[in-house]
Image 1 (spheres, one colour):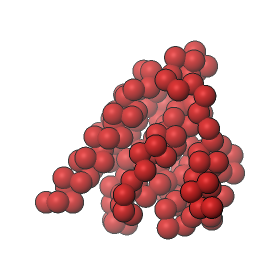
Image 2 (tube, rainbow, N blue to C red):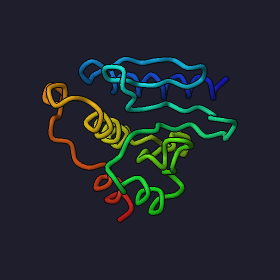
Image 3 (cartoon, rainbow, N blue to C red):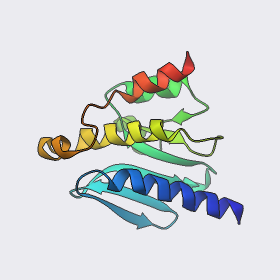
Length: 140
């Protein structure tokens, strides 16, 4: 029961971050959820995807950032099935305390790679750092 409550809380926090961005919708897909901007996917909440036991958020990343993050911090980041080779990265949410600022940076970066310039200009915190810079700083 505690795992269900934790999963619900994680998804609620992710939803709050994503829905603060212009024209974002959430699509529930069983135990997973997708976040879209104008019918384009920019993030997935994955809960035990294909029985892997992992709870994570998968997002688009800048070219090459996904493989660098996965190599530098394999306990936290991995290349998600199907979309990892196409530039996506997944951050594990089931490994201790979640850094919600890092999650927000990851989600915002993915949104910016997906949304139109007009929507990006309306997004809060319009000057987001690269998630690679933020996450690599945590290693040092």
